[in-house]
Length: 317
Image 1 (tube, helix red, strand yellow):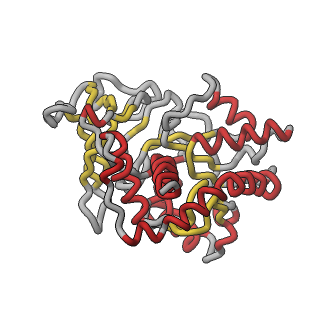
Image 2 (image 1 turned 30 degrees about the vertical axis):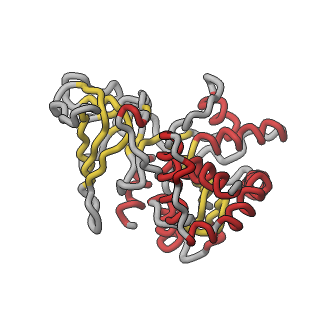
């Protein structure tokens, strides 16, 4: 948790001659907005725990989430198996455990209630936090929905400009207007800091003004051939499947082979225009299809969509 909080600070830190990033004083007085579940085993939920215990002295009212419940590990696991079976056309062969069958009624109620919850969540943000300095940790789809509702209500510059807004996960297949990032930032009145990360790693990799993601020195990245698994040389620029070794992992194996196709520049032969040293990931990132060797890893920004699909499947049984 201390390392996660330190990483949160560093996400917004300035570098060199860049314009001053956002002030990080008084974080204990800033409410945190998270468009997901309050509790769970994913790193995002653990980060909320760290904020509650370290910054808010146990005051849960400082954290505003879409769902106050716990994200079920059983349903997350099922979501991954469901996504894989869906891609192979094998949904009819799924074996559902009694535990999952017992969740069907809860799933039905939760999905039926989802539109109302989202409307109330956005309304609460607009009514309660308008003009305030806040923190946000989430995904582009939520920020775009929030900005759209603000425009519908005639609200401009929703938050204080020194709010700390962190966004990751890409668009996850959704199609937004070409200028959605700038228009969303303008409507919300904030600077949106992008990053790249996953639930299996301790910290996220912050984006720079040029748009690249700079790898922390304790995250060792590999670019692998998607067919053979052979690692590319750790010099020059290479495109392939991302594998990482997280040196901060203390209670579990820190290696993870992702389903992401990335391009990484490793050496000084292609330095980033922002001036930072070391390896960096280019902004163009995509998921490998299963036919290309992709996997059924469902975590981080992909979890809400996968969980929704799985819950809809259970609801219709």
